[in-house]
Image 1 (spheres, rainbow, N blue to C red):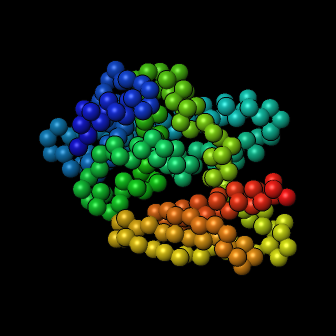
Image 2 (image 1 turned 90 degrees about the vertical axis):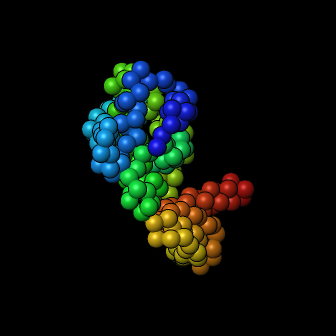
Image 3 (image 1 turned 30 degrees about the vertical axis):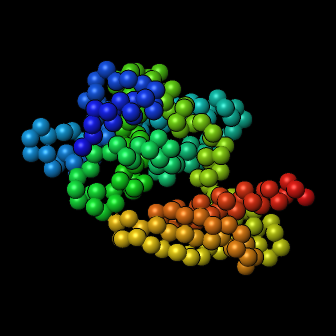
Length: 234
């Protein structure tokens, strides 16, 4: 159960104090938690998520439109999609440790829902929706700029790391890229994976994550940083 202190702690992190605390509570309430409440049943975040998704799309579209005056529509669409996709939003939400505040039902908690990208990204959108309703467009706009659109170049590189690394490796002699799972541990609902990225048969980086895909993405990002550093030092 979320405490009053937890609400205040999250408000301090995002730099906004809600006038209607129930909107914040709703944004953090998963349907599994709401369905378990027999008395004082809570509303879940799904309607707020719907609204937040629309606000996020408008703000990110406006940002990209003005930041890239020569970029064609197709590329703008692809760039926006990479910025606001499920893993990207989950990545931003984890920066806020938003997953620690989600109210989950016991079953969803036991099966690892607190660390699932799909849930964490939905809560991020619901939070945006709640900010829009409680404080208006500017409050939601400022939150998105601070917590989603900041450090955009590095974030986009991270989101597209596997694709970017593949393109870099293709320019090398032989141009071979593979990923190898080197460690898997934890119960089924809370597993962690470690993966190594191999370029031309040589292990050059390692990544960790709660899924193999996330571990590969981290390994790819680390490999990109290493290869770029080697190139700069030539």
